[in-house]
Amino acid sequence: MLRVVPQERKYSNADLAKILEVPEATLRTYKSHFTKAGITFNKEGKQIVYTEEQVRLFKDMLELHRKGNQTIKECVVTVVNKVQHVESIVKTDSTNTTDETTTYMALEDLLERVKTLENQSSEQRENIEFLNEELSKMPERDKRLMNVIRDIQTVKSELEAAKKKKWWQFWK
Image (cartoon, rainbow, N blue to C red; front, side, top):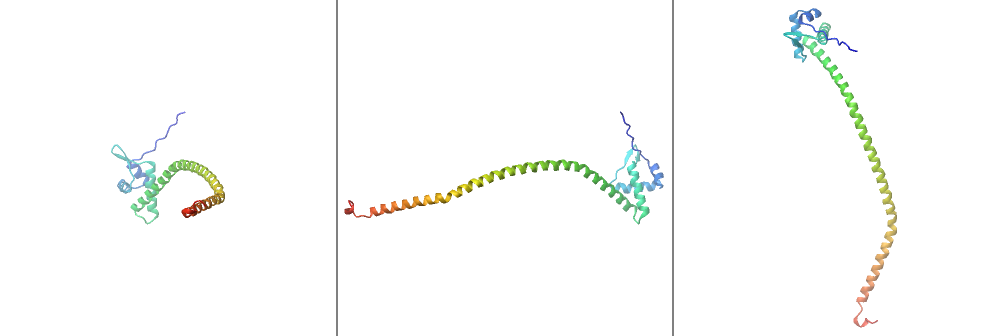
């Protein structure tokens, strides 16, 4: 099924001046303020055309000017800042889906790291148990080693005593 996508209506200087109930010269002044604030307007041929969104900007600016004590310039800046704030929120929402994907991938990575750390932890526990068993065998090993050292020392002292005998006591 084919859908007809409605085209956005475009307004000329004269149309917008009638909608806003201001002279065309005043409209050109308003347009220059918006241009200085960073809003761009499209041209068709030699004429500037305004979109529905831009018409809303002009209406909001005039409404602010009529309500408060602000100059046209201040009203334009306020309206443009509101529009930019809304656009940044929309961009933030679109990046949130990317952020969610990135967050999901980061969570998967963290889960993988946790599993790796659990494996390393179990290996370290096994190593600690083995070392504790070896440490419990140490006192027995130390006792045997001390006995061997004492035996060596007695043999050594007997050999030195044998060396100190005089030559005529050799046969004794």
